Length: 317
Image (cartoon, rainbow, N blue to C red; front, side, top):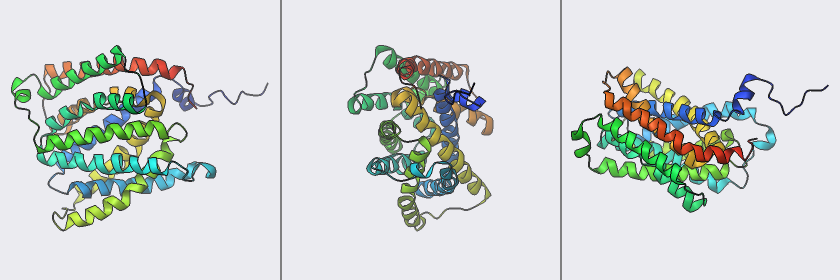
């Protein structure tokens, strides 16, 4: 009896069909982005925001040149999604990295992560407005629970941290970052309905390179980078893991569970940031911060239930 071609042949194929797979991809993306925030804070005096962003996208573009060859020739061509890809490129590949690195020059990592915690709410509202998705009480409640966990993680149980929090210049830049990322995720949901995550991420990365390189050249006249081994290794990590791997994992997760379900787990980013800071920078974590991390995970799971039930009604490709 011939083997049914629809059945998964490898362990990876089985995992890709598992209901938990999109959430694993999303968590993977947030972990690598947590490392990106840590490195971005550490590199704030070594290179400007456009220089770091241009470096990561150039590295990612070279990696995508090799990965892109795995697609059939018929699936490599640029179709009618060009305007969508340009929008995703300007928002997610140019705007978000630059505003993140720029904000880290004006405000602390704690304030940056705290404002980042509003991302699920902003994305859910944008998805409701633009994609006409339905906001349920459990979804909104889970996101709010997760946001409360972010407050605990950033505050660390010290009321002074939150009471002194103000929207300074860096905070306003991060608010713009959150809105752009929400729009990027919503647009990604539209494009990945008919295209693979690799195709979408590769083209949006390539589109961003001319803009970022031109801006970086102008930036060098004001703030030339301090090129050393640490900067090169950091850019390589950001380009490969925080860009290629993370963006493809994120876009595939968005394709499977939608932007609102994916953003429910976006609040894991500050948790990973705190863990990486404790591991590499010697920062101490308090009991309240561990409690806040638990609330973030719980809130993400609650908010994702709605998206998970909806995803089960549509079998992924």
